Length: 335
Length: 276
Ligand SMILES: Nc1ncnc2c1ncn2[C@@H]1O[C@H](COP(=O)(O)OP(=O)(O)OP(=O)(O)O)[C@@H](O)[C@H]1O
Ligand SMILES: [Mg+2]
Image (cartoon, rainbow over all chains, first blue to last red; front, side, top):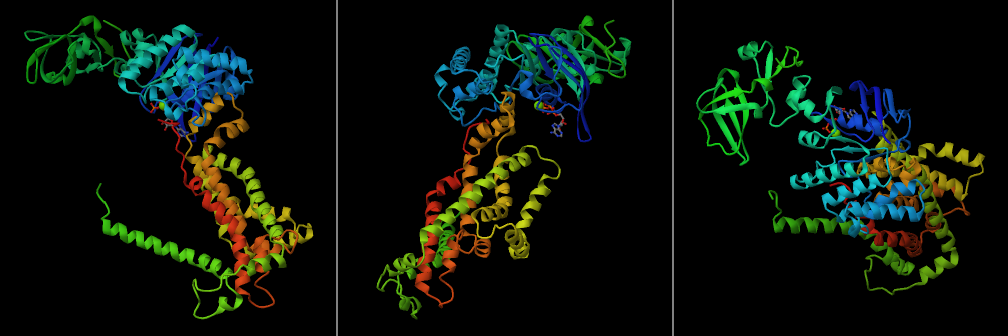
């Protein structure tokens, strides 16, 4: 069981107001991802929940109990660090067993749990090794193993995959998702990689400058961003923003249209454009274009498109996919 | 590589290093040599290098005249004792400074270290009076306290430097794993800092072993270590070079041997694979 609730959680470092006040509800068993640009306070918020930083003000409720002033150990949470933070002087076995030893479990119980975790994570052959003799992916798995044996109320992950290479990252992403489906334990996952956020999350929390910009299911954020910041942050490549007359036509300050929601034609359309760079990926093609008065845009065409530099094309945004924003960047809803 | 050394430059530096090394080593070498000479040969001019009658009589006489092992025992107790007491205070202190620094941490460290710049003789009278009034004169306990306090700034500084190298994530991981502060320090921090702690201990044992000012001024017999043993040969009856040399050789031998064998430990770095 691990329902977590933040009430007006504040954190200042000296005079620096890093988290001005966050309210958040995380349900039991949910996979919640914190995303946001670098320095927006994701790690700080996670560390506040973990108890590694003291809150300046506010409440942190775990299963209804305020733990804001409790030591990390008392909160029953496990954390996986970006740097793995394994104990270098202990074997893999002892790394995983450390938390159980601290909890005073018996040798038999420890052994059973460690062996079990090792089996789940494919670490059985490495139990007697030191972390120094493991690959990055294996170290990451040890760090996860250390977290799961303690049967925590929730797992906290701080960018656990950012030290891994691209292929391994995809693998581990799937493994962590699989682990969540198996354990059904609450997980809070910090990342600045919005692909990880979209693919893993039940619920995404978008942060900017210590503020929650929007909370919602990945597809809700994708389809109905609350403001320009969320619209630009979720989705890759980024949403295009167009102001001026074209926006006036839609009765707003600025419109946003995702690269995948623009039809490309060589004959006719709404906006004339010139291709600057074409990125051919096979399954899709990204066109970085100059759309005359509307400035640079990115559009995505499916499949192989025989276009290259200087080609003249026409763009037509899908009307029901246009996002409208007012002068403050707040979404106005569809026309 | 840009600034690759030429072989000639390399040889030049090697020769220079050897010269410096020999200059440093020469007094010790000469002392050992003199300890095997007779008193007459010891003062003869020009001095003889190898071609003299090697003799062990100085050592025999030194041992007969004063009980070497009693002094040596005191040296061991004082240096090891003050180092262990020092660790007890320096480890928590360095932990706090390295992992929970404040704006003033650096200042506090520098201030601690600056106390080492004051000449000890400046506090001789007050400390002597305290020792006299509390009955600490010529006691091992009193001397351990003085040596420990004298070396504490250096221990804190060294441990602080080593602890700084340890990623705080690992300690936080231990905290998440439910370790209390003492357990975090004993099971996680200290094992990772073993090389650093070993070299800190070693250096402090050496410093305490060689410390002569306080050991000479605050002891007479019961707690007197090897420094007092040496000093007793340079006194009233005039100078006896070869006996003094023999006594000195005996006094420095143990610490030289320890230092020699623990060189590896002293230079071994923190070569773990914790991060990355
Ligand atoms: N111990 C600290 N003392 C002072 N300022 C801090 C401290 N820790 C973090 N900050 C500041 O708080 C802000 C948020 O930091 P945080 O590490 O939470 O960002 P983040 O969202 O995790 O960024 P990243 O994606 O780069 O990891 C930053 O501006 C950072 O400089
Ligand atoms: Mg971070």
